[in-house]
Amino acid sequence: MGRKRIGIVSAIDEGNDSALRYLILHLNTLQSGFEFEFLSPDPTDLLILMLTRGEPLDREVVRAECEAFRQGMRRRFSTLSGVFQTKEEEPPDRLVVLTKATLADNFYSLRHNGVSIIALGNWQRWMAPPSILEFVLTLTVREAVAAVSPRLRGSVHLGTKGCVGDVTPVLSDVRQKVMSSYLCGYCRSALEEDGVSNLIPDVEVMLSKSWLGTADDSSSPAGVVSALGHDLFIVKGLEPTAWEHVRSTLRQDGTQQLLTLFQTTLAAVLIAGLIVALGLK
Image 1 (cartoon, rainbow, N blue to C red):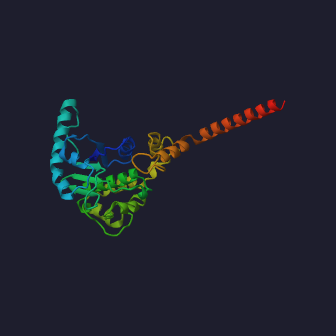
Image 2 (cartoon, helix red, strand yellow):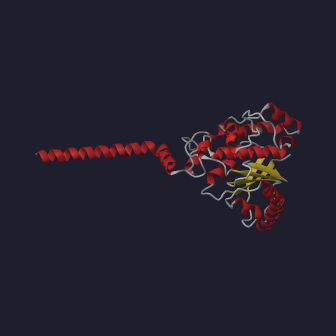
Image 3 (cartoon, rainbow, N blue to C red):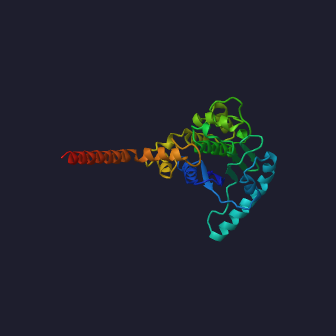
């Protein structure tokens, strides 16, 4: 059996999402059970227009548009595949839509007919750490798990264990499963019963976050996204604030800047001393 393909559709119309895209696609290099790919939606699609409208949305109204969206994405994929004459002609059968929309009932996700909606509109800066990008990573992996395991679709277990299957009805509760994310005994058993126990190591490695590395290591994912302007250990939201930008710059170039400041200060002191000395003479 080949990789389970997961199509990611970004309906986040806020700033530069290159760091977000890089981290999600980097998941492909960590394991061989899942394959994540970004797909471009039709900007006139009713669901996309709804999710970018900037107002609280009725869950059932959103759900009602999911099937039409899925069919529209399949037609779009087929059309573009024909235009570019690609060898891979079939689209992913699972779509995950990332959006800054807010559901009126304050839940942050829904699934319907092969479409998952991750609604991040209720995310607040006080919820960090972890950063919103780490939220998205964990929630994306959660949808990948739901795609392969019927037993792990819908609400799984009520207790908060730090497991990817925690119910966490409101977005603020997700912090625990993002920071401590693992597969609990129940979820591992469910994957085994669904005949996909081979995917357990893949899920665990994606959830571990140890693969992120540090911002100081330019070859690590954290280092790469830092170069893209998003220091995971400083920037909380999708875009850095002015202060976060200053802190990130100091972290990246702090030594050089301190040296420059020292040299400038020393030169100023020497010049001032010279002026005083000449004046005294």
